[in-house]
Image 1 (cartoon, rainbow, N blue to C red):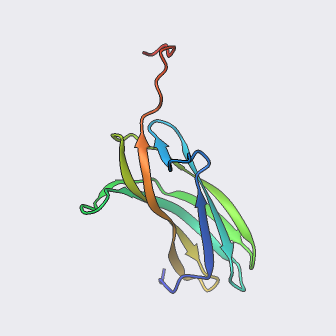
Image 2: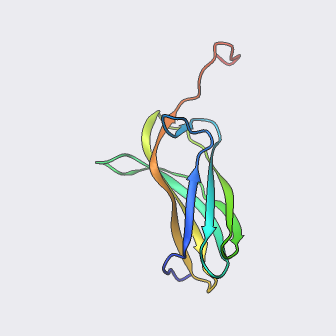
Length: 136
């Protein structure tokens, strides 16, 4: 696996459960991220893996938690756009963290590159509690 210059791809990540006040990752729940990849190359590319990590905010900027890697095995033709879902599960103390997501992309020549899919601040929150919850 020889690393090379990233291919001409455009990645846009959205969070369907995001609110007007920002992206919240709810502890104990599946938090989906929809990753859309547009291939601007003249040849097909393949997305092999999606993964990420949660980091403390500056000035510390240390890894708090590595997230699981998900196999994508998604081939995208020249000029095409495809989307995939990446699920984020958390069990952390409520806090603001930096979320970094990346994709491993294979070029047609068999070379691999890592491309940033998302790099932004998210809030870790606990699930709302109901007094009607039988586990309370």
